[in-house]
Length: 113
Length: 115
Image 1 (tube, chains in turn brown, purple):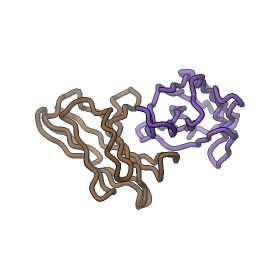
Image 2 (cartoon, one colour):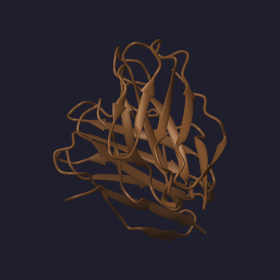
Image 3 (tube, one colour):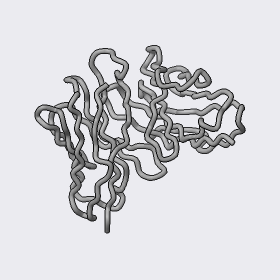
Image 4 (cartoon, helix red, strand yellow):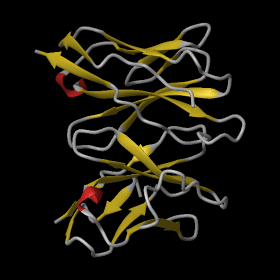
């Protein structure tokens, strides 16, 4: 596609439920990133995939968070047993290579009630 | 990790140039300087990036100091659509350190454009 696509755009879930957030990167982009942004805050790095290398998971805040990238393309971020502090906008970005700029998606706004 | 320092906010009048400074005194030789901006309720948008030489594109210009310890993003004629938070970020591409390849966003500079 022309840009990075994220779905759903909005998600409201009850505390304790699991959620899956999807990211379709730009075709051919080898690098894919997940960030989150809480209300009024800056972007917090979560995880980074580069080609077939092992992902950099150093930003995941707890073991309730996991992500996978299938076939070097689509990525899914899963949050298990959601908590209210997980409420944020989750942003996905992709880039052609590690020296190039990112293209961000519009994000998924997650609200845990 | 190499870090950047930016002013919290800057104001400009419409159609005037805006010069956004960024200090990165601990930059390493293989760190690229990237600029992104984030409009309200949107994801960040790539603006420009460079390594050593000044760079120009349709959105802005990037002036990099000779010692690379600072840089300036230049918006040549500010419009109301340029009101956003502008982030200056270093991207490590050299040795495999904890910061390799990924961006660490700071607080950025809030640009306010007045008609």
